[in-house]
Image 1 (spheres, rainbow, N blue to C red):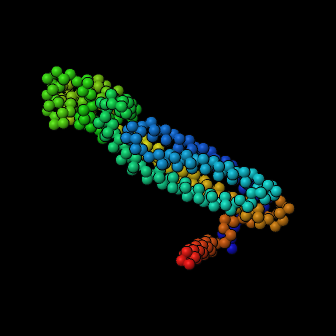
Image 2: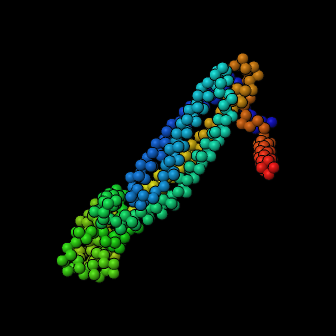
Image 3: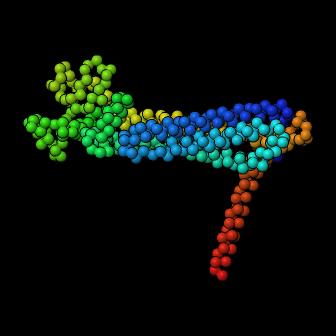
Length: 343
């Protein structure tokens, strides 16, 4: 007995074909959206590649671009089939392709599911890449004359301004590195000499941050130097006063930006899976309803459509039997090849 059978007359078949045609073209629009988001995500990764030490993974955006293109092609084909389904002559042309097309749709849904999972699972790798990239970015901030690092200062400053963040974990990361190049230090100054000699590695460390860490919304003029020295500023206590620099780390800010983007895209891909499943079910009903017409020459006659020709249990058992038969056939062929090789 067929699984979930439904009776159809001409009016129901026409409504189903029209509704499916609209759903398929909606799926094409969703495919274009996924493709566009893949391009956008790839551009955003490229734009801040230096912040990730050029080690960012483009697997997710590349998959999104591929899935978007496939969605447009697969659903445009389905829309064409639905458009021609009520014309017996035109539908006869598509009928032999329907089974391979349904299998292709199942494979496409598996690819969509993989893409959605990667949107969520790759966020941890993104977090680690950002942590390492920002750590190195802060270290190379001063190397404006070094080939390959000339624009690191500009990139990091623009990132801190745009994302309202400071440092990797927080603003104190700047205290641990020399972020002013030696070419801008007066080596004849006793204070500079003492600061360089007092450090084991000979670095010029100070409790200061770059200008890009300043919060323009603060009522007090920006204090970016001597942040831990209360006597250096009037009416100031770094332990109790809210600093007028960004206290949020750039790793947290960038990860929040990329993870929210990946979560939104993942949710869209999951919604696309449901939409594709509805398209497949509708097309199965439409094709079986057209195949079971009592009098194909009479479009007014009734017919019956279903999702599966047999029940779920019978279909599953039959599928397992086919897989076992296929496995045995392969074993026999391998055994025959081994005997032939031995003789």
